[in-house]
Image: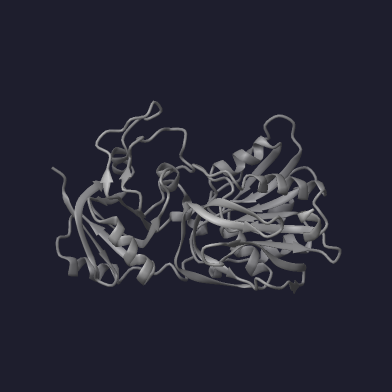
Length: 383
């Protein structure tokens, strides 16, 4: 028999279910993920720090938990919500059940609730604070504690998930380039995919300065990368990134790194109603006309014009990618006066564990940028 649990949203709506994972009480922003697979990568994505993740797929935990797929050193979600947890894990790589892993890492969850109804509520009302408890039986008492929690808007969280000290991921095979990568909540697959392409990746803390960046490698880095991460991009300091752009260092950013790129260029950011989270989001690369199915995890977006270039102190900025569901900015490009690409970013996850892999070419685009072999204009890219 499982311990009963309740989930209470900040608008008072309450769901009753069973405790899943650790028993106790937790709080965070309730968000939903539409992925049909990859729950282990979702749980260990630092971008989910301080968020309670609702899985829209009804059956979770079928393949258990292995020791190869975590994207970081721990589970980061504040809480976990599923409908029908697997009673038995079945996979040749499984080492333990998901329930056991959540319990061992102290992650409070709830199962047996109508996750479809909860997801529809969040789509209509927007992401909001919530609490899960298997120790509190009074929804009103739990609601009072939910309303005491900080909101995600205004939250400065990248420093809470970043590494304390720099480390190096060596290139696989012949070393071709050296990259300084700021860890704002980086996933392990990102430096791994760079390393597979001959890049030596120096992962730096989120607090790294331009001097720290320039100290990477023998003669400085060939390129600079800013990772994904949690929190409100409006709270982050972009002076290091602006210094990178002033020096014309090739730049590539994803997710939070895209939002900070936008802010460094002078654009604003804003909070989406319920965000994009899942591995089935359609995005168009406007430089090629190709539509990609992509992996997302973001609740904020860049406010940039879709139909015109914007002149910045660093060059001409344009929107390179757009979400086909809602026209949200999904990528930015910065070009010089001759149309040469200087820096770019995307809002989604080209490392995409557990998939899809439509956007893996972006790592090759970063290599071309560092090698100086990028097409000189949008028209050239089409050709």
